Image (tube, rainbow, N blue to C red; front, side, top):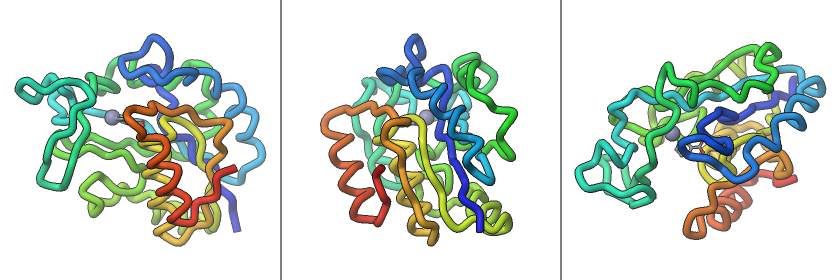
Length: 198
Ligand code: VGL
Ligand code: ZN
């Protein structure tokens, strides 16, 4: 039985100075590095978008950042361009100990579907393969940290719980976008799905 640490999207674009900066996003890097030794397995998640990704407001005619649009798979928030494959913004924060990670799960590569969760794309059907990796490595419980609490951390935590893992989110090593009540909604959705908020 292994407890895995899943580090969500600690990338330059989500840190101060980045394209979709999360307030205090860089403050969590040292504490996350310090936690890594306590876990049997460390996984990094990396938001990884082609430049024609439909979640970018610039790819939706007249779309403004943070507006909601209807997509075939449901409602989608439009974002500033971020984490474009091959750019510095898509790289992990330079101080993050990525050498400790057994695997890096990239998500959001399909230009037609966003992927907040590191388990399933936003159609809620297309898997990344992380569930199988964790099961094959005998992982039973997962701890999530990273960016952003109210989007990629929350979606990942809820999917992990639905896949049968015991899930906790360490709130002191997460930071939120918190746009229009998104943090409150995400916290209550995580609680409803049996995610432990520590
Ligand atoms: C994220 C919005 C768009 C995140 C990623 O990592 O929380 N949020 N892409
Ligand atoms: Zn993204």
